View 1: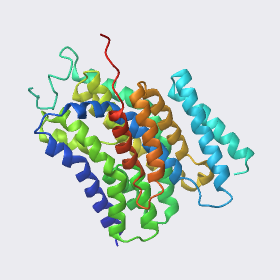
View 2: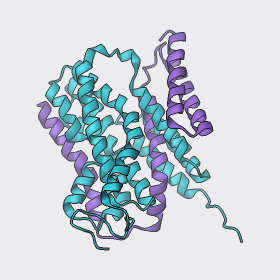
View 3: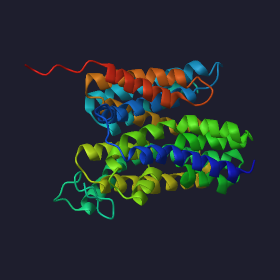
View 4: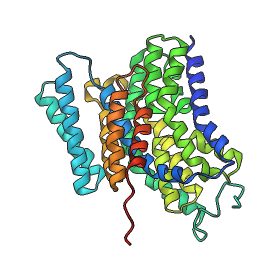
Length: 109
Length: 241
């Protein structure tokens, strides 16, 4: 199939996902539980996106899996702890990147 | 509520604050989020060049789809010459969370003109959703969302083009996309200030990790639904007597 058709169709599907609830629900009041859910959605979405991307980025069941898993999980734990302790995203990401790069080098990845 | 022609919700926005101030504040608030997702944009640009598909088609995923995970998946599926049906199912599964975001923001946007909702929905993606929710909680106007969302759109397209230009100069072993993951982790921790939200974050991470093992990229939406359900089910703190 032509690449332009695929990308165009994917763009239409994606836009429909965005606009459909906005159009259908714009005529109604938001129920209280949805107001509460909107406050929850941001951190929950971040956690879900990070976890899914971490698993999806792992190599298959080869001898490279264990080092990749160790490097990624260690960097994530350090990032989470530093974010909690210092309340700074930049500092937390920097700490995680250092741990990730160090472990990648030392584990021979 | 009486929206003005440009979509400003006079009941939501602070009455004494000009729209321009809100737009600039939204743009500023977006800068750290944009820095967090820029590595992902670079990775997509690199993937476009290295996949062997026409570069114009790969770059067009930026403005046409405007959703990083789906863009990467489509570039990979195009490289594999996957059937159109498989591509569409993948796009639906990966981007289903956008419908959840639209559901949450629909109530805030219901007084805006149709053209404004069409534009705001097009710009709706993870970082702009966050800026939007934060902005409405601070009683900022719609300009706050739009200011942040436009900056994100411009920065995202620029990062993809930059990735395509530097292309093969970037070694895949650098795993630039992992920086974006670390940023998401940091932001999840910073935003999870209540016990119920922490429960939701943990539930979302576990469910999304399990869901990511499924074949149609359904990890994020499974995680979000599980996380929100867990947080809503968590007992609310008792108010003092």
